[in-house]
Length: 597
Image (tube, rainbow, N blue to C red; front, side, top):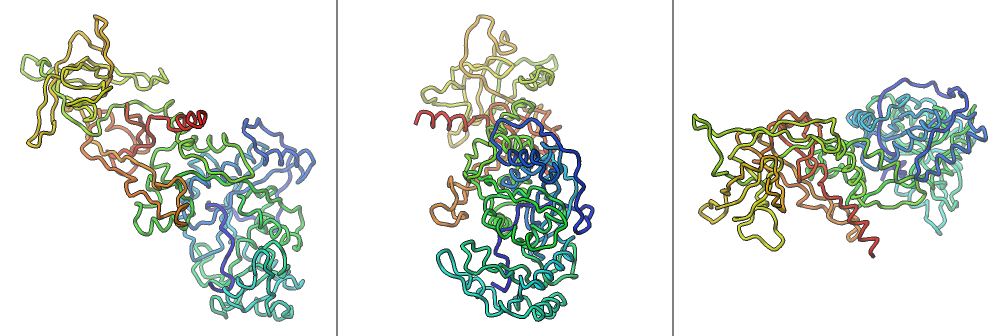
């Protein structure tokens, strides 16, 4: 570790470009806004904001911000923070900005800035402004000079490991730096020379002078500035000293006029430092208030950007937008509706205690929304031939083609119907036929009659096998009196199966997904979450066939493959469909088991 290496967690995720506010400018306070109707779920943050409005705090003004660091793609955990920031502001007629906390040139990239902005817009939120902490580097430097001049900060020449060790620990005293009582003039001179680039990385850093014996470790003379010679994505090479998160964050909030600085719980212990920094600066306006809430975590999921970045770098996944990833880009590619994510974030409410949610609970919301809007289509992922031996032919010997009008979405009659071709040359799912059916198997077997969805009743009569004895074709007859799938004599069948007419099909590739991490709590057993990676998290099926209309599905659109699940068309690879979620509501089953327990 070098001197001044950041020891605070980075805030959230990352946004984009916008107008630069003048340092110290306070947004004008508007008329006192009225709160909009709140969701039924508990939200102590909005209750706090409502109370502040009623008391006239900040002149009744509400302004929040989402402050990501542009060092990776946003993940599902960030969705909760984004929703909390924007919905809180919107509920009280306020505004929410995006501010990139871009204070580490070694890890931040324009790619991440652009992806963060795209993800926020995809979720349906529109920042009033997009700012950068780097917009305020000059003001932050001037305020650091103010601390030094008031003997509240000093330049320390110790290395980072020594500084870390001297902080001590809970129940262990801190050790004051030998440079702690350095003369003010000397620290001012060294700090100016640090800015001028006279020293190597790690040679020295600027620390706040607070209390090395504080029970709060973040108040034990935290690092405010460190030397970095990396190339910054916006300021380029203009700066070689960079503020730490704890020095830049609260001051950036104050510069922009943030009223409520909403953070996740890991920043609870940072709040005294947040307040100390603001208390000791000549701010011409009210200080923002930091409020913490529980972050969003799921089972079978890892949201550490360091680990996600490692999986990308080592080729464990295909990129940040791999559909197995918990990134918003990955969920978008997989077909998650953005409204399902924000709806879930609102429905679970806002808590003060961290908890891990079952991933199935999010999938249930996704399934519920897709059920209402997704068009139904038929596709066969593991095809086996089904030949109707008594299917009629035309006078010229060609097979007859019949057309059926099938419902696009039974949940929405206004979606109408589509025409689907039917012939005697079909495919069905291989698992829908059994040569030696087990008990309670009601699908197709020799001598058994089933319904082909919306078409006819058919009865299997024989099979064709390959040299290894595997069934490659099922021979059957159809009952021409059962068009539409109902028998005029009222006889009942126990199974309805989907199908595709081979001459009228389109070829598909289907990607089926299991959990990226096999363990419910990745890393719980070994301490390293990547040890629990599931080697069978994706199955790629080629040779699939779908009804012809699937060739017209646009990239990103989600359709329901009847009986198989919801599938999203890949935006870049025509014919590739990612299974978003299956049709089975696993969350409902989990809840039933919990109720019985």
